[in-house]
Image 1 (spheres, rainbow, N blue to C red):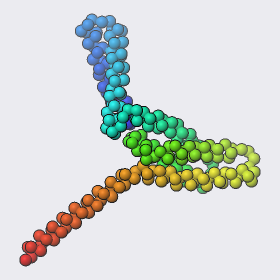
Image 2 (spheres, helix red, strand yellow; image 1 turned 45 degrees about the vertical axis):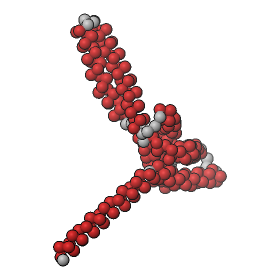
Image 3 (spheres, rainbow, N blue to C red; image 1 turned 60 degrees about the vertical axis):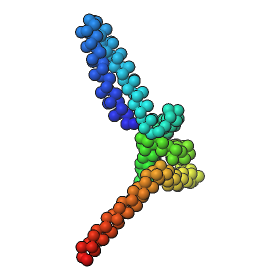
Image 4 (cartoon, one colour; image 1 turned 90 degrees about the horizontal axis):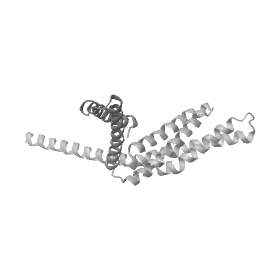
Length: 218
């Protein structure tokens, strides 16, 4: 669910309710202005909360999940969001120009996986290796690299460690790209199926036209 859109829809519902209840309390029940306002605000807050519950329930149902399953995925996504923020901050902090493009690609792919999973929670199961393995490794490596590279004195061993870390991060980028492919694998298969169906339909239409043309010529 898009947080901004969800907030806007809930406000679109709760604000008119709040104003209506305030006016009704003030004019119909002859309540004081302040008390009517408090009742209206309370009604708006209750409506805002209830609309959120209803929307979340519909969202969960639309994806064919149970509430417990959704809460499990949501919990892991919340944890992943904090890890991604740390990862992206560390990757941007790395002062190594030759690897800039690779690091930006890494950030782009990780964001894509997260956004797809957030939008369609069931994709989480296709991205478990990313969330439970690759993401943790990437955060640890990137933050360790930033720490070591900030040291004022660079020994040969330290330089070798930094080079090895950059190499490992590059390899992780490849693995994360594979994770993204796993997340969208079903979509790719569905696309191939639709392409095959479309080609079959086009072939049938062409064959039918050729047969009609042959009959006219006879």
